[in-house]
Length: 441
Image (cartoon, rainbow, N blue to C red; front, side, top):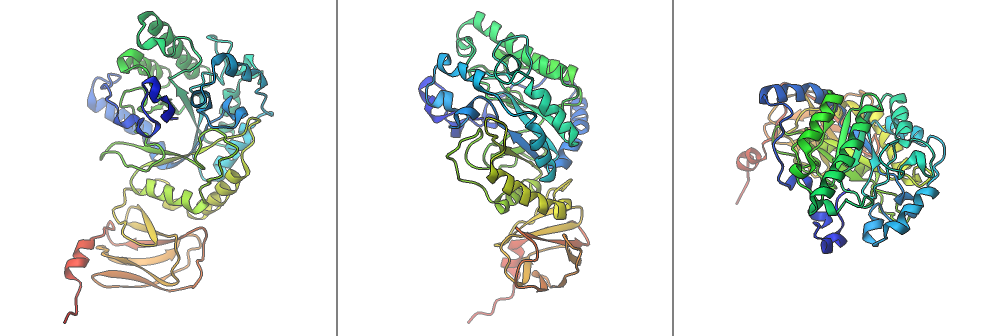
């Protein structure tokens, strides 16, 4: 993923600054007619907007070292020392089956796997280099196994591909040497062509770090044109310095400008690749709160797992995603195909919406009653989403109170109340502040 702070000396941006959304990007010429381009994008993105929740997988040679996916760069490991690790990389048979099963059970609808990370090791069969899974320790095409596993669980298939490459001899020289740039760009384009040609229908292409070239240097227009010719239904992100179909805020939830699709990618702990010492795990509640926030603001949540070298999923990831998945089985209708949701003011709840139904997700259960201030629509009915049990309520101009609730939360890790309204639910807290009766002295 994003660049390391230790790379400043090499003229690269720090990790906290390497937001691809913020980089200048060339306009796309894949569809010269803007109306035609937007119509095609709406068609291609329909499933993605409905899905809301996906699994990211960072897995590669760095998983053997277990010190973060940037270990080669952060610790200054030379290629001559790092590359031989490829011969030791020998995953157990078909680990992707467990990833895909976990993704489906967690309520995720698509997966995105690292086909090549910055280390330059290709997880797929390629004619460009010996530095690939079939010709090294694995002895087989790991991308093929992943594709088959995802499809076997009914999930959409996404490929992550890093443009930056620490292994290729032209990976840095391409910035200043025209001949090196030409060689390296053809190497990268060939990989993209192989990925788009050899694995059937692919749903997402997730480029990453474009250092050290700009869109013209990468010939990104030509690259995307090739991608869409080979995969006309695919979605492409914005990290090859073109706008693409969606923006990619990293490790934060930041909605794109109105009308722009976006997907927040996050880790389950603080590392993308497996790091054995990283125990800063997100709780199931935090995972669901993040998913709800993304859905509320019209975005998707791409949540990462970092398998160990043999492909096993860390136990903490299993526990968190399993619990989140059980909640999604009971309450997923509040997430999938959700609409932009304007209400958000609460000290103990967050909100999503589908049409005129407002979903109140209570993560700090207060007992007895919960309330929403400033709701402008009239409430028609309320129920627990998980069970369908009816909830009593009372409403005046300034608030709605849902009453007769149990002292302990009836669902975990949060409880969702489905509130049927007579119009799109909107919240006006300024109205409450200005007009609520005040008894002063």
